[in-house]
Image 1 (tube, rainbow, N blue to C red):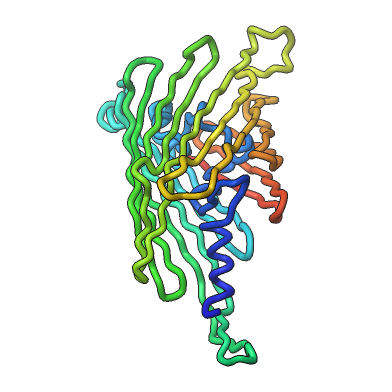
Image 2 (image 1 turned 90 degrees about the vertical axis):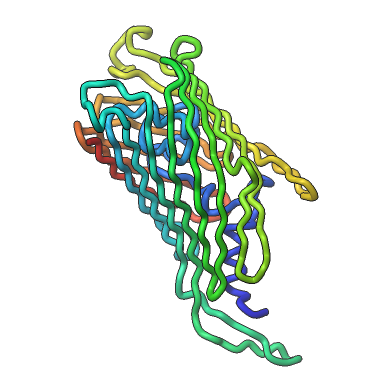
Amino acid sequence: MRYLSIFILFSLFIFAQESGKELDFMTIGAGARPAGIGGSFTGIADDANSVYWNNGGMCLVRNSEITYMHADLYFGTTFDYISCVLPVKKIRDKDSEANNFIGFAMILASTGNIPITDTIDDYNRIIYEGIGGFRAGSYIIGYGRRINKKITSGIGIKIIDMELIKEYGKGYGIDIGFLYSNMIKNLSMGISLKDLTITKIKWSTGTIDNIAPNVRIGLSYRILKEEKEGGWIGKEGIVFSFDVDEQIKIEREKRWHKPRYHFGAEWKLVDVVPIRVGFDDYNFTAGIGFIAEHINVDYAYVSHQELKTTHRISITLKI
């Protein structure tokens, strides 16, 4: 029973099932804006959050952007995320249109002050041995390229680093993404494939945990003001989005991972205040934002059927 308490927590984040799918800290999501629309961001991916959601979307970022999010999650776990996208050509010539983009993202999740216990005899007496913690980090370097005016692509190389009390693990993964903007009038489609080569986390104990590839397909459809009579629609219209993702079953794995569905809508009631609503599988989400020339502030409310509701706040700088 050694490390029992922290093992239970670790299991919730790394091996717990949510709709038949492995849940690790990388599936929690990143950014308050995507969270507010239920995580249905693969077919939008037009800001600095694209490094995480869909590498192909980096090419839709007009200027350099950096975003930061903080959230207090479950069991005292803190979650911090930072991401940035830089149009390469605009670094040298601000008046030119960039075709190449680089991005970086960092995700950190940590839990501390968890009691470590052990049993020492047949009476199962519990001995308190101190406190421990769990820490996990993911570091992504992304590259995006514009194929033509409508199709963009991207790739991300990531390092995953974990620590559980005195043990540690590390792994490397590859993500790829594509975005087809306006493939039909106002309709865009995105495809993201995470952990393409099966990410292997190698622990200091000799254990190896596999993260299976995950395929995510997203659609977004924008209703523009000029296509709808009346002023209620707003200057930039309403964006409806839908994602479906499924983890690919790997060899010798007995479990079947059911697909997860994500729905959302973003409506700018006024030009500087977007209102968001969505469903992350069966969990209701909502959000609101404030948009200024060089800064965005976003808030998301994320419910959960089994765990507590969480609140997420993001700040984005546009340079």
